[in-house]
Length: 263
Image 1 (cartoon, rainbow, N blue to C red):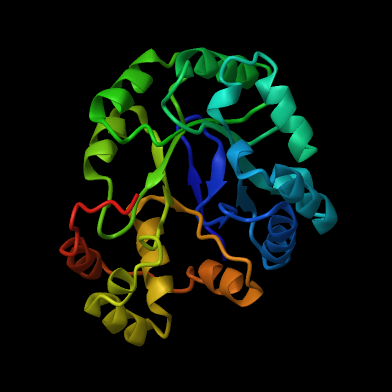
Image 2 (cartoon, one colour; image 1 turned 90 degrees about the horizontal axis):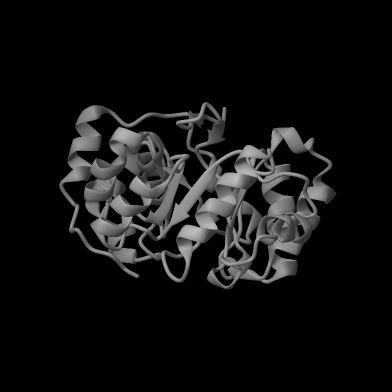
């Protein structure tokens, strides 16, 4: 059974989705079709991935009702000064609204772009506003939260057991802004995935180490978007809601925090 988080504006968002970073349009289309057939409802893409058209085709081919899906994408910095940026994103995806639209990087004229997102939000073209990679410096994250008239619903950033975004989460707490994790497995680092705690818990719950880590994310309150083009992996990444880590196990995982980013 899939689980959801409720964002700070009341919008419901699935806890696990498919990430499409580094996928071609054709690969993204196939992955989206496989994920939606497997019961996923959240798909994440970006203008900068050059695969939004493939994601849109995958959604269309799935035959699933649009209102049963949650689609997130990101505006690239070259679109920040374009007042029509949101309409263009809708065109690329072939959708009439976007569930969550991010600014991809805190560079260029991001304040103008944020105002564009706020207008689109008020017009109903997007259901939630996100900021991505604004966690690199605390002052940037603080200034974005301060500047926003409509406080962002989600921050998308690198997060995993070696880097659980402790500082950013503290800053966002008063606003109810939720974290969405990329590199959720530490860029596939074997030493992270094979930490003894995950091997032990995998054995206990009859899951893989990866599934234990993904479940840790959701129990930390993070939305997680592992990317895969392999249907079996796509299935396994989503098959994490039939068990729950105990508070003691979560505390044990907390001990491996190295405050280490990969990117």
